[in-house]
Structure formats: C-alpha cells, structure tokens
Length: 439
Image 1: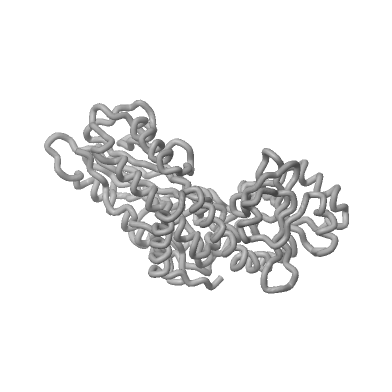
Image 2 (image 1 turned 180 degrees about the vertical axis):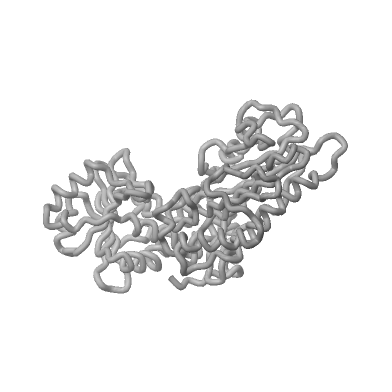
C-alpha cells in the first residue's frame, strides 16, 4: 500500500473535523464522517486486500439481534431475518458492493454501495458471478474476524449448495488487512479520539478530581466514565483501570482504596469515537507534605521507560513482519543495556537490572486491534507484515529499582497510539512525557 499521509494533511483534516462539528448536529456529523471513511476504504483498500488474499467474493452475514463485528465498518442497518454484505471482484478497478437484506434509507444514502436487494436474492447473485473463492468471517485466531455463527454457516452451505460451499475460505487475514490499512479520514478520526482520551486522562490525574486522603480510585474511574457519557464516547475496555503501583506491584485497582500522599498512580484506558477505540496510559505521583517534585529515583524509572520507547519508535518500520520486528527491538533493547524479560511481570531480583517487556499491539477499531501485532500475546498476527498506515499502541513495561523501597522495583507502563508511515512511527497526539503531580 502506498498511501502517503503527511502531518500537514492530518492537521488540515483535524481542522475540517472541528469546522464540520460547528455546522451540523453531532449525530449527523458522525454519520457523514463514517460514510466518508467507508467509501474511501471501499475505493482504496478493499481492492488491494481482496486481490492480495486471492478472494473473489467476501460475504458477511448479519441476523436480527446478531450483528457481525465488522458491521460498523460496512454500515449499520435493520436486518429482518438474514442480511448480507457482499463484495465481489469482477476484474475491474473497483470492487462491486452489494447489500442484500440490510435496510433503512441511511444505508442506501451512505453512497458506498452499488446494489440493494433482499436476502432471498443471494443464491442467484452468487451464481451469476460464479466466484472461485468465497471468504466468510470465521477465524481461528482473531475474534473480530469470527462473526459467522455455526447456524449461519449451515444456512449458506444449504442455500448456495455444495458447489459453492467447497469454495468457502476463512476471511481472517482479509478482515485484518481491510481494517488495519487506513485512509486519511479515518486516521484523522482516530487522532481526534486519541486527543479526547488524553485530555480526559490527564484531567483525571489532577487536583480537579483528586484530593489526597479523600478521593478513591473508584471516584477517579467513575469521573472518567462520566466524561465519556457527557461527550457521547464509547469505552475500549469497560471501566477505566485506575491503580496504584508500589514496592509489591499492584496495590489496588479502580476500587474504594483512598488515594494517599506518596502514591504512584497509573491509568490504562481508551475511548470509542465513531468506529475507533484508543488504548493509552498515564501516570501521576501524589506529593508528600513538603515535596515539590517527583522523587529522583522515580524520575529515573520513568526516564528509563522513555529511553526504551525511543528505541521502539526509531526501529519499527513497514515492510518487516511483526515477529521479525519483535526480535529486532528486543535485540536493540538488550544492546542498550536493559534486560528483556521472557514473560510479563518477571523482573529479576538484581537492583542493577532494568527489566523490560514490550507489547506493541495493533489498535484502531478495537483497543486491541486485528492488524499486525508486535506482541507475544498475538502469535498469529506476529506473522503479518507491517504496512504503511497500520496503527499501533506503542506499549512497554520497565522495572527500575527504587532505593527508598529497599531496592524493590517500580513498574512503569508506557503506552500511546501511533501510526506507521513510510518514514516510520509517527505519533497521532501529544504522548506521555512526564509523570503528572498531584498536590
């Protein structure tokens, strides 16, 4: 894929988002933006990924009360019994797009589809096009590509007959490629979601929200959730993870634990805007009486994390598999004097070791996306090639010994969302550069 997305282009798109917001109601604005994104994806990304994966036809099935995970990507409408989104490569420049059995005027008005019909037309539709391969949304490794139920698979098999059932293939890789390769309008939308995530998280870790000795972790989490409701935002992971990390690791997580002076706090969370979901972390330290700055040992721990983040940003490039990139990054981290952990949460007892583990996973339409993933917990997606416009959550965990804790280690988790371009990693909003201070 050779879409070049410059920072100037993104800046203009973000300005256009803001200007558009003032002219129309929020619901209509979001609908129009999703239509624009959908049309661009169908025009620019869909032909590329269907042909790369050798797919002639892609059928996604909806049932009343049971939407496929890709429904928002394709355009939501009313399904009475069964409904089908059908994409066919007919050998021309574009992919033919049809909706059979998914209704409402908004679906027809969104401008992305060529053909509208009823669900009973599917068999004749497929026979006329006679595809050599038919991709369906069943997947062994990616949940968001596994939306086809057992009974829907049975129905397709019975309705289309054995001739076409023998041509069914998994759309797992196709769905991953379609979602994870981005057009400019969706990159701008995701960047806007990231900025809203950042703004709420950083306000949460301030004296606007926190009074030491009074405010609980749950109070902070519920304040963040309330901000999401007020701004009509979804949530990437449910309740925000607001926690204290200390000499023995997690002290408490989003519960009624009262925040005290000397606590080191972290947030892990994301918001949903349109069809996009972010994933990021922020940190704060609650100053003790008489303190005016972050303790030097904790600043050193945070700086160690930033050094590793710089290594990740410098060395993640398009064109390699995520697995190859994972090995390369760990080698660079080792060469820089850090100790790479084999598994999560296994720092050494040696206070001289700065222990690191990385988990730069796909992000975008989910807090944990379905594209290439530079993370041990996504082994299938480690085999995928990183492409320009893939979105990643640049995530790492760094453990540094704190003398005041008797040499026990402070866990610094850093995470912000970025895009891989032909130049490398580029941030989509201002990333975490410091530990916030609560007075």
